[in-house]
Length: 113
Length: 111
Image 1 (cartoon, helix red, strand yellow):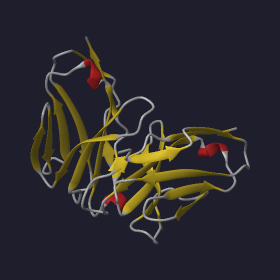
Image 2 (cartoon, chains in turn yellow, cyan):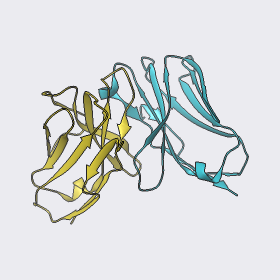
Image 3 (cartoon, chains in turn yellow, orange):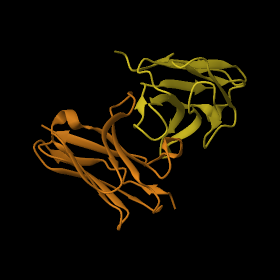
Image 4 (cartoon, helix red, strand yellow):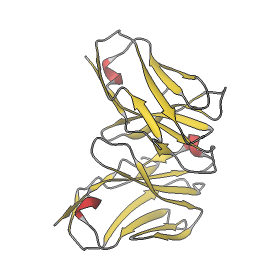
C-alpha cells in the first residue's frame, strides 16, 4: 500500500520553463492538497481539491495551476517557473475536509535557476 | 505575529529522556489539532490527531490541548535516537483546507 506517491522526486528548471508535478493516492480519499515548504515559513497550501471535479485556491496559488484528473490523481503545473518557486512541494490527501487528517507524500524538490 | 508559534530548536536530549514539544496559537476558534513527524528529506507523517481539547495517548506519545491557554503539547516518553526528526504542529478551525502549520521543532536524541 503506497499511500501518496509523488513524481518526480527532484527537478531543476530554468526560469520560464514549465513542468507538471504528479501526485497519486491509493487510499480512496476524496480530498487532495498541494503544499510548498520553505525554511522558516512552514507548510503553505497552494491549491486543494475537496472532491473529484472541484479545485480551490489556497494561501499561495499565484503562478500555479492544478488538475484533479480523477479521484486518485491531482497534478500541479508551473507554467513559467520563477526562482521564487524553488521549494519542496508536498501532495497530501484526506478522506474529507474534516473527517480525517492529512497523509503526505515524500515531496518533490524543485530548484529554479 | 504568526498564527501558530513553534520554537525551531534544536532540542537536544539523551536517549531515554522525556521530551516536551509545544505550540502556541492565537486563534481561539481552532478545534482540530495535529502533530506530524518529519524526517530529513521525507514527507510529514501523522503522529497524533485531537479534536477539541483534552489528552490523547498512543504508545510513547501523548498529545495535550489546553484551549484556555491556546497551547498544545506533545510528550515523548523514553525517547529514542529514531525519534530524531522535526516535529510540526498543525491546527484548524473549520476544516483541513484551512490547516495552519507551525514551522517545526527539530529534535535530536543522542544515544
